[in-house]
Length: 382
Image (cartoon, rainbow, N blue to C red; front, top):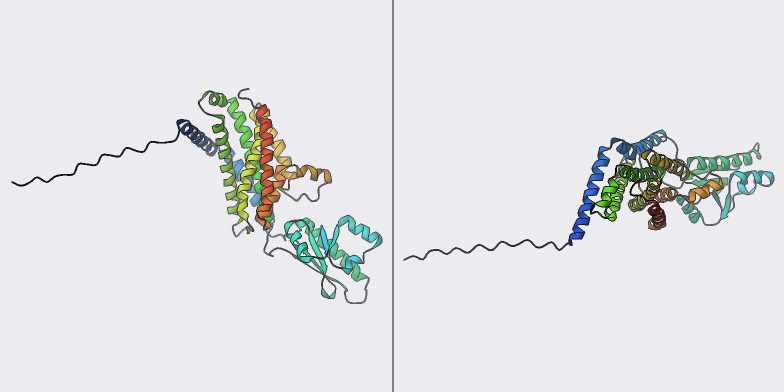
């Protein structure tokens, strides 16, 4: 009699591990994900929004980059290192006239002066080389002011040489930029236009969304639905940050092509946290505009009144060095001015964390203040 083979009993199916996430937390995550998905789909389907947020700013970058592609890209306040006979010899009324167009400070440390020129604290460094050579070192950040400095110094040199009629020129000017000679205007266009694009997208996005939702009773339905205000706000912030980072990626991808020739310097990756903090700050402006406006037209008008002057006063399109003192004071109070300066530092001037960190803190503080004001003015319904 043969024994029947025994078959092993199947192992009992293992029950899935229970989800330890609290139900309330799962609901918040689900609400955040759903709202974010709806906002992204609505944004992608809105062709006008896609144009004005992504393509319109990029058109400015390509326009200015193309127009200035072949231009020389030099920078203007100067420091005189040591004795420079051609400058020291200018006295009396001529000296008064020179000081009206050129502010000259004196120093002995050439390396420190050059570093200030690189960072934009000085427009040029002037020293005297051998055989009466006047050496001018400038930065490629402001073509107008650097050209002005070279023109003024060259004029002083020519006047000094005219006094030596019949003899070989006593002085010769030699000028060069402190940065790599391959630097192009795109190095200084990109940070300003990127800042303008981020500000425009965040301000208009927050303002028009808030007013549109209020008019279409979406806010009312959200208020009655089991969705927390935190989910609504965080999803809107997430979408705006994602949009701004997309803008940044597109700008840098286009600007670094061989045609435009942007060269990223220093800790350029710091542009990412800078853009994130800036988006939150500019969203707070949009929230304030959306809280004040009753219609989308009014929100659009308020946003335009805020964004366009701020862009021109913050150096997004052209340098602000030639502004009157009272306009410079206003410019210093604008968040976009500090974003443009910090972005230029990390993208073009070899700046690091300490160049970006104070700006990020200031942007977040600005956002907290304006968000508090907007909270007081916020209305769920008209």
